[in-house]
Length: 99
Image 1: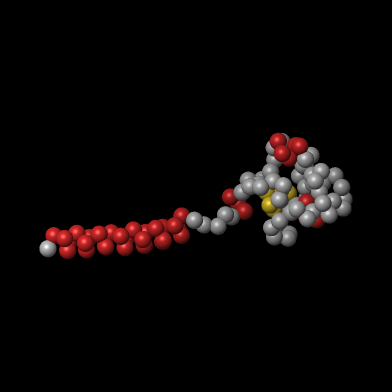
Image 2: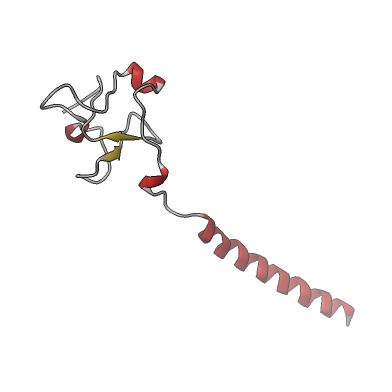
């Protein structure tokens, strides 16, 4: 009788563990929101190296028309391939601008 009880308890806890791992992982992992990503600052070492500024000195060249900019068109701050984990100003510019 004791081995049957142990087996039942083992199966119950195993099933609870599997359910906990699958459901628990879904609540712990959520998509990153734009509000969670910091804005690139002009004094960031990589930004300074590429002469990044929040406001482009050129009328026809800015981050919004650069091929390296990602994200939704029209958003004021968007991800850039050059600065992973940070958002750049769509009206900004850097020396790596590519049209």
